[in-house]
Image (cartoon, rainbow, N blue to C red):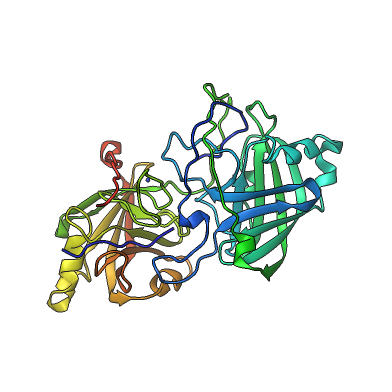
Amino acid sequence: MTAACGDAAPTTAGGGSPGTTSGPIAPPPSARGGLVGGFIPVGLASRIVIPDLGIDIPIVSSDLEPPPDNYGLCDVAQYLTTFSQPGDPGTTYLYAHSQPGMFLPLYEASTRADGAELVGDRVDVYTSDGVRHSYEVFEVQRGSTDFSLAEGLAPGERRLVLQTSESPTGGTTNLVVAARPVGDELVDPAEANPEAHPRVCRPDVIPEATEPPVVPTAPVATRIVVDRFDVDLPIVSGDLVVAGNAEGYPLCDVAQYLTRYRQPAEAGTAYLYAHAREGMFLPLLEASARPNEGGLVGTQVEVYTEDAMRYTYEIFKVQPSSTDFSLADIVPAGEQRLIIQTSIGPKGTVPKLVLAARLITASPADPSIVAPGARPRVCE
């Protein structure tokens, strides 16, 4: 993931079907480790190792491709961005195809003794900041059609869930494995960040489940409107890859959400960023330079989500020269906060302009206005 920079003057888990292949997709820095806009190192799942099964593959984001094309990629595992990362409370949800070089050994082990031999196995998930998070398998669910093993956690509990298709040729049910954390250890960042070469392997025909599972996470943000400053932008994932875009550089003509943070319906912080350019967040930067910060405090911001909801926030804090994520990370329990971030200088400079807003209302919206057509492009 990357925080916004610019000039101052957009899932469901894939199944396990082999199919046609094409060239590799280059994962962004979020999949390989690094800094978020020069602020702080972040720990994103980057490698999974299951020693007893001989599994050792890189991990990338589930958002490298836009919906509906984000069918699971080959030669990697992927983390669902709407779940947590290994160092955070909640469920980390990883999936990969049940094919050679991926999660096939996991599926094969599940067919022996109804998966009992998997219980107690160690699973190591590395994060891009050089930490090995170790887990122990405690439950195996074959024939799964839902996300029940990812739900119902106690406050502060951490869990790892692995998912793959029930067969290499695809199907309508999944194998789901749950594991609990048993320890964390610092490692060499080079060990934690293998080079990833995700490959498109979407089949011509994808089997459809009779009852598709419902992901128990919040719908994603699709549009941001700040009427007072004539800001109106579609929103896409911060992990989206567009051919030709420089590594870690935000896209133009859209806002993006940091997948490490929450969505508007959830308690915690939703984090949106865009370039300080015409047609993007430039009006916010210009306002911040005026007396009394241009009246930004008290301004209302509307964020729409894909399920036709409108979340209205009110800005309460302006940090014109922020160098960290404190406004996003230090949030009272239960508060729903929005962070808006943009550059104060060209080409990825730090510090940043950061605005913090609190949720004041949530209401249904006209479905026809919540998701304007997003056309993210490479910024010149």
